[in-house]
Structures are given as structure tokens and as C-alpha cells.
Length: 101
Image (cartoon, rainbow, N blue to C red; front, top):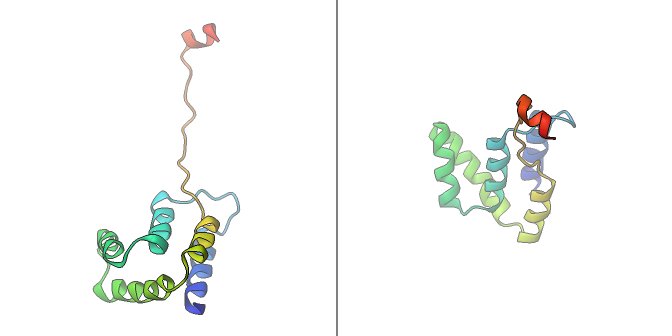
């Protein structure tokens, strides 16, 4: 569990260093999947990154440690993870709509 905590803190430090930073939706999804998906499903999600097999195996090895944690502990960690936020472009209001509102 100490290894997982170290990995989690490093990940948060690298990707979430600003309090007002917008988290990449893919990163937020990957972190949540890491905690809650079964091994076989999570391994398939890692394949989309075209990572070397030894990198995937290393991540799966860490995942086996986190899978030993209770569901309530993983849920608490999941609640602390950033949620994906999408950039919303400011929508231009057409002149006709301004007259109505």
C-alpha cells in the first residue's frame, strides 16, 4: 500500500500541481479505472496508449496491490481524485436572441 500511495502522490503532483488546473478527462478516467475496474478490463484500456509491455506489466503489478484494498478505501481515494472538466467555449449569442432576453 505504501507503493500505491507514493505513486498516487507523484501522479497528483505532476498532473494536478495547480489548484485551478483543469484535469484532462482521459487522465481522470484512467485514474478512476485503475481503482475500480477488474484487471482484464483495465489492461485492455492501457493498450490504447501503445505502451511497451513491460510498462503495462509494471502498472498491473501496482494494480494488484491496490486491488487488495477494501472497496471503501478505494472509494475514499476515488472521491479525492479530480473529476474531468471540459473547456466550454464562450457561446456567442446571436443578436436576435439578445433582443428576446
